[in-house]
Every structure is written in C-alpha cells, then in structure tokens.
Image (cartoon, rainbow, N blue to C red; front, side, top):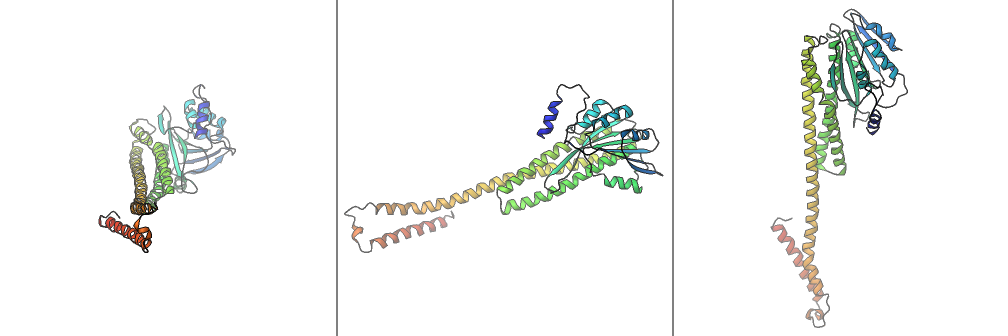
Length: 354
C-alpha cells in the first residue's frame, strides 16, 4: 500500500490521461486470450499482439478478450486507436487503486471491481482490480496478473452449457460480475469459520495471541467492506441506465447480483460487529482475570497483616515483656497467629469473598 500511494503521488501534476501503471513490477509478458463464440461456433486462442484481436470487434459473434498483465503500457495504449477507448478510461485501468465504479459511454460501458480470493496460507485476502469494457459484441477484461475465478465461465462457454452462448456481451459481463461476487461468499465462509473458532478460544483460554487475531480479522473485514460496498452503486447504476448495450433480459440477472451484494455486505457487517464484541469480551476477560489475581493477593495481604502485627510486637525485644521468659511463649504466639489466619479465612468464606 505505501508503495502504491508513492506511485500515485508521482502522478501529481501530470496531464489527464497520462498512462502510468500503478502496481507491482512484473517481468513476464502480457498474456492475451481471445474466446469468440455464438450458438454454433466456438474458438479460443492465445495471441501475441493486440493487433490480432481487432478483427473481432465488428463481428456478429460475441468476443471475450482477456488481458493478463497491465505493465505493458504500449499494448494498453493501442486499445484507444482501434476500440476508441477514452484515454481517461485507460488511465483508470492502469491505476489499480481505483474504487469500484461504472462509467457509461456512447459505444461501451466501463466497469471497475475488485476480485478477492484467499492467500495461499488461507489466513489473509488478496485483492486484484478487474476492469471490464463492454461493447456491442465484445467484452474486454483486464487483470493485473494471470489467475482468476473465471474458470467455470470458460468451461460453460466451451461446453455450451446454460444460456451464455445464446446471449450477448452484456450477459457475458454479467457472468463475470457474478463469478467475482460468488467468490466473495467463499472468502467470507472461510473467515466465518475462523471467527467461530476464535470465539471458542476467547471463552476457553483468552490470551495475547487471541487479541492479535481479533485485530487482524477486524482489519480484513474493514478492507473487505471498503472494496465490496461500492459495488452496490455499480450494479444499481447498471440497472437504472438505459444504455442499448444492456438488454432488458440481462437486467433481471443484474438484479440478482445486487441481492447477492446486499447479502455479502450483511455478512461483512455481522462479522465486523462480532469481532468488535469479541474484542470487548477479551478486554472484559483480561480485566476479570486481573481482578481474580488482585483478589488472591488481597486475601493473602489481609491474612498476613494481623500476623505481621503480632510478629512486630514480639520483635521489639522489650526487657519486661512477660511472654519472653515463658517456656511455651514461642509456640503460644505461633498458635495465636494460626488461629487468627484460619479465622480470617473462615470469615472470608462465610462472606463469600472467596
């Protein structure tokens, strides 16, 4: 995050539309995959240059162009020349710190959202910006790196399952959005299990590690909310917009994604409230534990204060203290001290202080 903010600060003062990639530096070559299909035909190929996909723009078939890697600025810039993509849109594609949003232009729709999945160890989340450009018969998706949650969609297109090959590019964009949102459920389910396990540990044996885990999960929930919440506005805008690029039949499916986003946000807010409550419980548990310790120490002090008083009197060594010359004086004083100590313990027990 600090490195990304540093790169954003480097853009200060530059003209609008200046293309600078904000993200991790990569050495691998940008990968371009084209899937062209209709009800009868299917074609999938990996191309080497962006020029090879320009012929798909004006066909009657639906074309999905997926670009893995945004570090090749020259390649991204060529889209402006052949697809008429505005320079500010290209700037937003390369600025991977964008907030989810939608912008409707005359001949295409631009959508930004966050693809979220679990880290390899399953203890954190990885967020990647996905940008979509939806045209008349094409959909271009931009990813920061190779690897995504779109595998089931590719399989459905290849095997001609469902209605995806009967519909157009707007339905393809819906399928991509739906796949990203469905993966939110998987991530939340994983962290829901962690929160339940943490809740049990909090009751049985709270400790410093428990507090750290609660803080970590709270941070993750805040990040999730920040990246998912704006998607409500995106879907609401797509439903309200009267663009000819989105058919009425597809709006029904967009409504379904909107409902899913509401459910996801409810889960995120619930988990966040649970973690806040768990943090309060942790503090209360630590406070109660400290009170128990202080209670034990106070009992010890209360018992030994009168014993110290007795020991102090007989430690003054006055010459005419009658008990000093008594044969059983030592054992008598010990007996008195024992009776005082036991008596105090019984008194505390009767008062239910211990």
